[in-house]
Image (tube, rainbow over all chains, first blue to last red; front, side):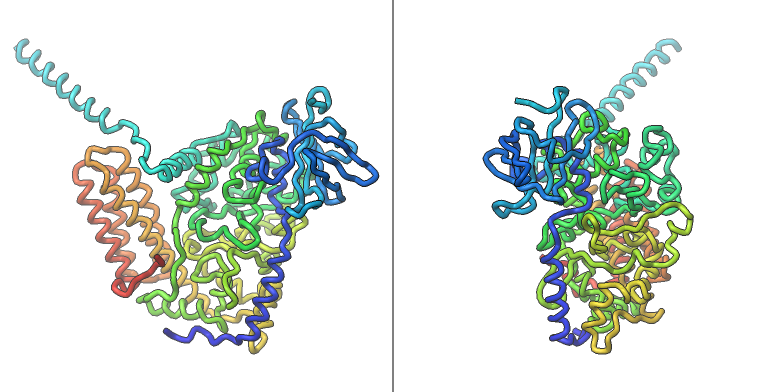
Length: 135
Length: 466
């Protein structure tokens, strides 16, 4: 077999290390995930029923910017996307805010990571004809 | 006279009945495959090409055409009728604005994507080519999770290939820009996602090549050497074994993302038109400028190249890595940092053509493998089967055509091209005829093997792992 380029081993190992570090730092967030906003509550493939918390808002603490859903508490940060899922009333999804996370509203929360206490990456709020109180 | 005429009529009616019975027997829908995996793949195929998900009429196959290597390019687009669902933005008033750019679609095969969100449709979008979906089994996995689409982040949900169809339906199948599930489209069910994933994973190569191959052609053989030379071509570092996975010497990095500077190319064709083509920031939101590494085995017949279809020919695509846009990019700088003389990639014209020749030959070999498989499968069908055998043969024909074109396009292996053209003729006749179909198919197979033998030492296999 011909010598396909003798590697400068130390240099290439350095490059490999840099690249591995770059890749390890790749964030969870993904671009075409933007279509996520149009997926109704509970229907996100591979996430709903596995990674997300689905239930009603049990409490919302605006001072701490945190909500409790299905017994789990999630922080809401500047990075958290809040979407008003209006598919049940046949209207398009809108952006929401912390004020929309009212107790009693049905929501789905995706944590940023699997780490306990991780903030929410996105929250979908189910909106209905009556405004969203589904209980 | 009347008795004779009546007798002839009775015989005609009887004969017609027998023929109708035969035809009916032959056209009975195929039974579902006994193997559950094959049944799932068959269901996925049906969904991929025929299911509109109650949307604007498009299917997955609207952009990922089987006869065009599961992609589309301007030449293929030019053959489509004006009412093809691909052109829905041209005839559906609800999708007239901010859904596609018909000029860029027709001229450059570009599709509009809202990768950075849907909050500013007139200004926030990117224009991308249609990546083929061949060989996905070897080109999606990375240690950081699945990588789909041009920037590796093509899927919502868990980001997997399985979830990809959900995002595609929302982006491309919608009836209006409201994108309301249950109104503008329906989302694929879990079962449908399973089937679509199984079908896509079944397409093309199921394993990566193991290079070097015992190639016969002088130019392609030299191209392979340069490709594998980590001090010259350096191609194999990111495209190990001409696939989509990187390996810098410390183990596989999987299907990695790199910023290779394609966005910085001057005179990009789509931007020359004066149409709005925003900067594409690649992976993530905001993007980090990186794009996902595609496999190269299938490259030569699936251009134009790169995420923005910026370069039409495989020679041009290889030449890109010798240019300033690449060598000034983060990926180019990384290579330069590891080079004893501080060079990124420096190639001369002959070397660019040689690498391209290598890519053309391995593409032709893959075309031959695919078409051989399909033709062989057609021989397994019963003689009376008038639908499934021709269907398989017709699926083989574009592969044979492509093999001939990628070789002839660079003046490579004229004898192999002659064999491929003979194989194409035999396959075309085999697809049309009932009598003699088997002989014609076998003839096509023989010619394919002769063509293959022109390209590669046939006794010195294995060409593939496993």
